[in-house]
Image 1 (spheres, rainbow, N blue to C red):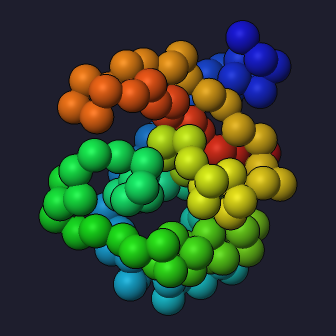
Image 2 (image 1 turned 45 degrees about the vertical axis):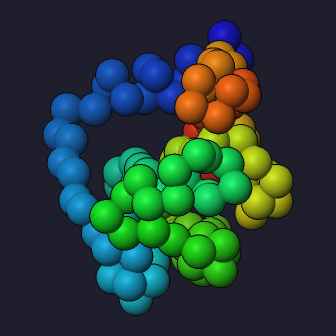
Length: 125
């Protein structure tokens, strides 16, 4: 296991006060990156996966275009806190988070599209 993955897992297990918030894309884009609450926690982002990286185009209640993924990446790149974003490996995600560390899960066969896919976590810490 890579050093960053070990760090990430130990970091998660050390958290004593974990909270979750469901934030719409529009709200996220207007959020202030100077909010002190964002600086002292892990900000995990699990957006709808990029369209060309998955089989279903209507799998989520809210879908995101590539342009919206770019806008989200812009916000996350400017966040002063620790950020982790999940998704399937694809050219767009690799481009948007090229300066972040990427932790890949084990490849799995996706039977609906008859292709191997890799889920990943991109982290800025």
